[in-house]
Image (cartoon, rainbow, N blue to C red):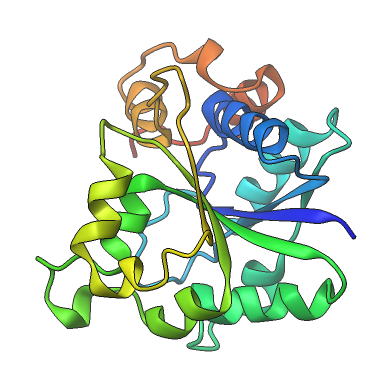
Length: 213
């Protein structure tokens, strides 16, 4: 039985922090495989800044040297435009793909907080969150000084399922460099070269991505 983590993000572009986070989680949570899952361009909750094809190409370049890392285009190819681009359906799909393995959803503390944030209107919380929480296990990475235990305690849904399904990890190091920061640097003529894999930096320069139009 393998232990598999599903790591979804826009990866727009993928950064060294994405890779470091995945590597840290794989090591500490004893994962056999981390599946990088880029979301589709037409998701209504995200504004992406380059095409699926470019983000997919950069992802392949970034993870090529790590046997523990694999990519999957399920949300880009299978789920694009179907109206069901929600994490609950994604996790059901991967559990069907790996019926004999332990499958975990990897998320940051900010996502766990927003999943059922008591201060957010119900319509702005995650869709199918009850079934998602009830039927899955999670690896949650510390982020931005968010108190993970307090996040869980404030949500009736989270605290009533706090039976070991939330594997809380502290990074031990503050690394919050974002794709947004890299895009802004590139757009303004900055130099974020060492914040992302060299091959991805070269790809961005070659294809003139993230430049101001």
